[in-house]
Amino acid sequence: MSRKIRIRKGADIRLKGRPTKTVETAAPTATYAVQPPNYHGIVPKLEVKEGAAVEAGSPLFHSKETPAMKFLSPISGTVKAIVRGEKRRILAVVVESDGGNKAVALGKINVTEASADEIRGAMLSHGMFPFVEQRPFADVANPMDSPRSIHVSGFDSAPLAPDMEIVLRDRMEAFQAGIHALSALVHGDSIHLGARPEQSMFSGLEKVAITTFEGPHPAGNVGVQIHHTLPVNKGEVVWTMHAEDVANLGETLTTGVYTTKRTVSAAGSEHPSPKYFQTNLGCELTALTAGHQGDATRFISGNPLTGTHAAADGYLGGLDHQLTLLPEGNEPKFLLTSGWLSPGLDKFSLSKSYPTWLMPKSKEFVMDTNTGGEERAFVVTGQYEPVFPFDIYPVQLIKSILANDIDAMEKLGIYEVAPEDFALCEYACTSKIAVQDIVRDGLDNLKKELG
Image (cartoon, rainbow, N blue to C red):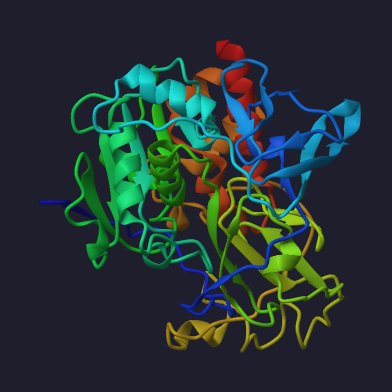
């Protein structure tokens, strides 16, 4: 019998542009990109040069710190470009597809009988370990660690996020195989799955403890689920993985073919035809936008709260399962008609400043990326706590990070959080503080201090 938890703090941002429930196979793109910055904490070391021929599953680069951790090509073709940024930092390895779908035979694994060392070694060599995140620090997991538990969120509550019922449709066998593989890495019933009460698709799964969650976003964040089931203490290591990547893990290990499927929610008010697309990791965004190239549109790889600003001709992020198109919001707004003194009949607000809070919950809104002002003095306003469902003082934690007070950060619960857990705080903040960036810097600094 699963445990039920009600999340009372948070908010559902009702954006217009929800995708239809149909899934369309995206057209193959000319190029695909594997982008090292998507995998936080990784310093890449190249294994290919421009012009090299590769197959799906061929190594493109590995982690400098853990050479056994391979990052593989999602398709077969030729390495077209190695894109570098400042100080020759590798930003992307771009592979031009040959349309042949040739794949490296990686070796099959019996996930129900393999040992922990066999599973760990296969995940490293088969390119699946980069999709495992650890808490604390919210970066790519260290394969040398022994996790206390592994957590998977079976639903995503972010605005316009993909429905996991659609994402995992016809893939539950692969998902179960992935669960079996992960269970070899921990002891006992240490695989935890968070689900909505109505998600019957997860009933009957083996080797997993299911907890059902009710309530608004961020109930779907794996960090929230960990906090309300088994909070992370100092010295403990917890691993997490996206549900679709668990299915990819199971399919990769059981077939011996590198699997990088992505069922992407292509959504947003500016998308001409919001829908789900079946594609591969690192595809060109043009395959997901139905040809939309508007200059006044913000292309976000990921969800509107935590995603990355991408170019219209850019690539889907390696850990992203969503593409969101929103109005850019770079036009000035007249104070009385569309500014903060306007009636606000078409404005969504977390407070009751506008009468839209009286409208039905089914009402959806078109929102642009305008922040409504610049950064201001960081004062205690009480806006963070109603949308932050942790037993943690968010403002005090942020200020301890700004002061680089390690002791205070530890006492205030930094080991439990990731930047995404503060996304709603950043949205609600009238001081316009980049809260997620501050948390990211705090986690990075703490990791350096601890060696």
